[in-house]
Image 1 (cartoon, rainbow, N blue to C red):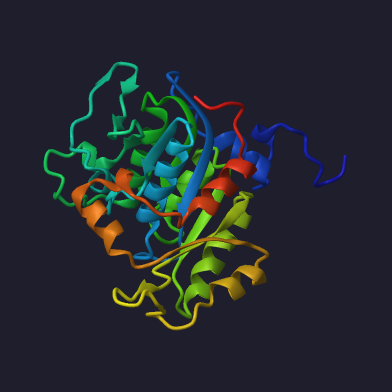
Image 2 (spheres, rainbow, N blue to C red):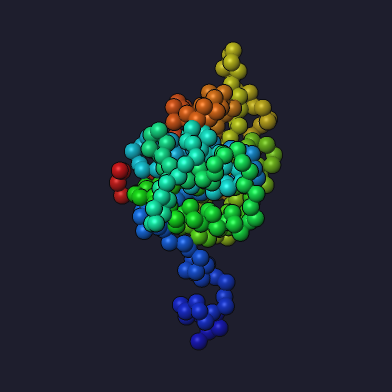
Length: 282
């Protein structure tokens, strides 16, 4: 037998291959869950708008008639409940926890929904945080979900690694900004996706521009965008550009993002639906 030939028996093999990882680390869904597709929203650094992008994608997908959910994996900086105006308070049974629901029926789970005071900091070490994210997948009764969006913490540390290895992530959306550092942001995210053998669906650029309130002219606050050039470098598409929109900011502050009226991420939602189609709408 050749030295590197796979025997399909991981118990007698020391190789650190992708097949071994998927067999040994993938966490099963809760018996009360049937999540069809999982999309992770990532970035190589913080503060670029992953939570906003995640929330907008969930709203658009729900409007298309799909059963939609959000798993807030940013345990130390959770903002999803605030964006949707969902208050703490989770119920459950011996079988698992019930996710919270937004005004339009989007399901969600976030550590802020489990705290008595949503402003209390989460001061936990990496392994505890990673375990919490896994519990949000296996310990929650999600029911039938067509598309689940995972709001990832920044970087490539414990939690992103846990999500990519433990959850059956079908695709990744990368969120970035127009500055020169876009190359670094995208590069880190793309390389981690390649390591985990997960396809990158495309790039969303946040804070792309501002509109002059008087003449409506686009003002590039951060200068000329480099996102398109970097996307071409990695063979990716720019699926949407979100401007600095005061209406969006106000809706997030009020917990009423589901009232948004714009087409900033319409193409991104269509790309997810086309790349990761489910059999039928709920």
